[in-house]
Structure formats: C-alpha cells, structure tokens
Image 1 (cartoon, helix red, strand yellow):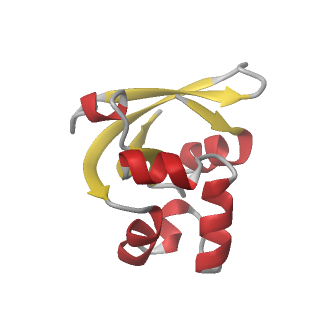
Image 2 (tube, rainbow, N blue to C red):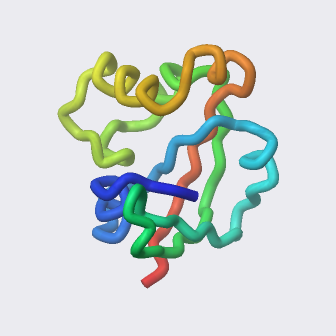
Image 3 (cartoon, rainbow, N blue to C red):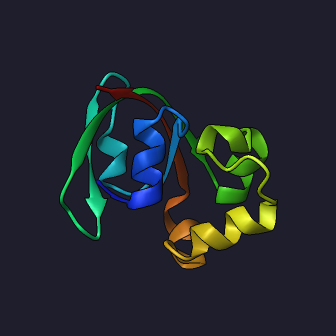
Length: 110
C-alpha cells in the first residue's frame, strides 16, 4: 500500500497506530495477523512492514473519527473538519458511501 512521506515516517516512529482506508474489495481480504508492506509515495524509494493487530469497519470516516482518538492517527490537536478534509483529499464521498471505511490497527515491524 502506498503512503505519503509524513504518514510513512509516522508509522516508522510508532506514532501512527491506525491506517485509514476504504473498506473496498482489496482491503476486505486483510486479516488480523497479516503483514502489510507500505511504500513511501510518490518517491517509491522506501518500504516498511507493519503487522495488522485489529480491524474495525465503519459506515463512514466521520463515524471512525468519532470512535478512535485522533492521536492514534498521529493527528492529535486536529479538528474533525481537518480530519474529514484530509480524508476527502484522498477518497471521494461517493467512494465512502459505496465501500465504507476501514481502520487498520498496525504495529511497525522493524
């Protein structure tokens, strides 16, 4: 899975504990205990591995953000609007409506 540099680094530093994705067909195959390889984008010059420790499915990103502390996304101090705006820079509301949201709890494997 691709990750922008700041989020990639945040996982490496152990600050980002939840990765946010659509709950699409590809993500529905993920199971607790799986290892996910993340690639730093856009450079694609570095990878890291993280173990899936939990999965939570939500009808919407807002429902997810209301349930999980922002610090688990390494977004402490952000507002709900900032969380939603950031998410909608990546995913569209139509995609969210079609697939729902998936919180992937991860642990960096160094």
